[in-house]
Image 1 (cartoon, rainbow, N blue to C red):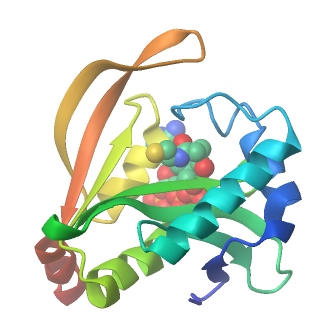
Image 2: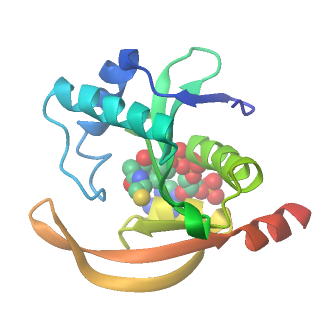
Length: 179
Ligand SMILES: CC(C)(COP(=O)(O)OP(=O)(O)OC[C@H]1O[C@@H](n2cnc3c(N)ncnc32)[C@H](O)[C@@H]1OP(=O)(O)O)[C@@H](O)C(=O)NCCC(=O)NCCS
């Protein structure tokens, strides 16, 4: 998929170095439900899993490339598909050096269009740390609604972390697109 400034494509084995740079950065995973990666083999494993899930149609994980330079600056995924309910979850991360340029919003918008219009998804869920203000802002800008709060849902980075749960229905998406 292409957007104005980005190309979204399935991950490839050659993305390991770029992904390792992103997910070994403690600032990127600060509000993530996992610790920073400590070895490039973790990138190889994640890519192999993503490709298997892509083939099995249980997850759509994309590399986010800058259209001009072809630099991989992040990933965005629709994952945890529950096909009988047309429901899935959304995850995303952008390399910290590229934050604040609108890239996450642009990539997620394209993936949501694809999910709702091509895959037939009806509901997308996102689970974020309440301290992750940038992530909350991106979700709310795209029409996600805050649906719930779950205290101490995760144990990561040496502490329990809460969840704010967001949901986006196809109806909200279509209304937003129409207005
Ligand atoms: C969350 C994340 C993906 C945002 O990426 P990004 O490319 O910088 O996002 P965008 O530029 O599209 O949008 C960020 C928005 O948040 C706003 N923002 C940034 N920091 C903010 C803060 N501390 N408080 C409130 N809003 C903030 C920006 O102003 C921008 O809004 P605007 O477009 O209305 O100006 C990025 O910070 C990231 O990768 N974080 C680490 C991984 C992560 O937490 N992923 C989500 C876990 S579920």
